[in-house]
Amino acid sequence: MDYCDEDVIVAPATSPQMKTALAIVRVSGSGCFEYLTHCFRSLSGKKPRSWKMVYGEWLDDRGIIDDVMLVCYAAPRSYTGQDMIEITCHGNPLFVEDVIRSLLVMGARRARPGEFTMRAVLAGKMDLLQAEAVHTLVEANTRYQADVVRRQSKGPLVPFVGGRVEDVLQIQAHIEATIDYGEEDIDALERDHLLFKMDTLLADFEGLRLTGGFAKGMRRGFKVLLTGAPNVGKSTLFNRLVQEERAIVTSLPGTTRDLISEEIEIRGLPVVLIDSAGVRETDDYVENLGMEKIFKKLEDVDLVLYLSESGSSQPAFDALLALPQEKWLRVVTKIDLVDEDKGDIGEIIGVSAQSGAGLERLEEEVVVRLSSAMEGQSVYLINQRQEEVIAQVIEQLRAARNEFAAGFGEEILSAYLNHVRRLLGELTGETTTEDVLDRMFSNFCLGK
Ligand SMILES: Nc1nc2c(ncn2[C@@H]2O[C@H](COP(=O)(O)OP(=O)(O)OP(=O)(O)O)[C@@H](O)[C@H]2O)c(=O)[nH]1
Ligand SMILES: [Mg+2]
Image (cartoon, rainbow, N blue to C red; front, side):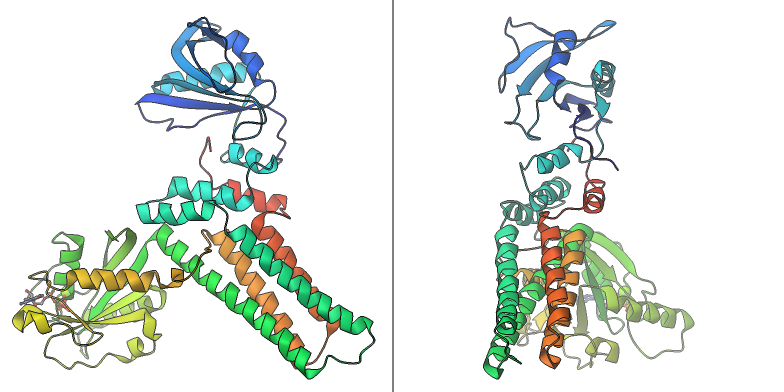
């Protein structure tokens, strides 16, 4: 894509499909104010001035299209840094399209998705990370996600990355200085010091990468699987949490055969809750198929709730035990059949899907587990592009560290570290390639 930003672009900033009370059309580019002499007639006697709203009629060659309010923003005090107009007309898609068409006749062209924000980035109005935050904010599905992104949009990642680039430079300077002084080798103490610095950097980036997993959960929903022996109450708890009689419940073990999923929200986190067949040794062909599905699913869920009935001592199955400790949680069910106050057993949460006892605590724990990557983190990744760049940074840094630990290949080490700095520049947009811009802005919505 050719990102020429000389021409005037136009797009609806509100939904172009829906009939609403009002709609906004956005225009950006040098020369756009001249269009107003043909398309706009003030009804208040005042001429359009920067940052002032004026009332008037919008016209095309056939006559009046609509009554509008408009605001001009003279460069550079606008979102894109260019001359901009925001026209508020009545929210009928027909008027919106007529207003846009009249601007096309004047010489504007339709904006591509994200083109306004891209111009803002090119004009230095915001960095690439802030632009991504704008996009994610518009796309946010829950309040929680919007809050996380808003904190990110204030830009804490830029100074974080800047600090790490400085660290990499220091490591490189240190190594080069030693070589320049003609020393054969770096002494043991210095070697340890540099290894420590690289390990610290690696740990910082690993922590950051984990927050990317959280961002993915926020975008797609965190997958939470209910599993356990037959009849322990998985489907009953599932129905209770989705607030609907979605899964069949009977007193017969082996009722659920397939995976059933529903999207819910738990304290602001989007969750894809999955009910499944009970796990047991059986000759039943269909039940075994259901269990195969569970074992496969275990690999890509964010959290597993392992349910067992109060009073039973059902051991967890092998595939579950193979998972990292933090990925699964034991839950005891049907505590209404025992003393509800003694429902929790240490770390194990006791619930009754029938009476509702323990459900608050369960939700709380689920949220703690799902958001653990964010604990103590002041910087976070918010999309896949950022996650991919950080994964590459970690790969290069680890290669550099291992190279350094194994011996001393100064040139190779330097090449790895230069690559790390290049990648970090790409992350913040300091060294943006057209490819990165293309990928990023093509996901934006029109008019943003
Ligand atoms: N008293 C009591 N009974 C419950 C509770 N939860 C489930 N039950 C009962 O336990 C039986 C099995 O419940 P289900 O939800 O079908 O259990 P399941 O784990 O989905 O069973 P399968 O699909 O066969 O693996 C039903 O008779 C439920 O009414 C509970 O909290 N308290
Ligand atoms: Mg069931």
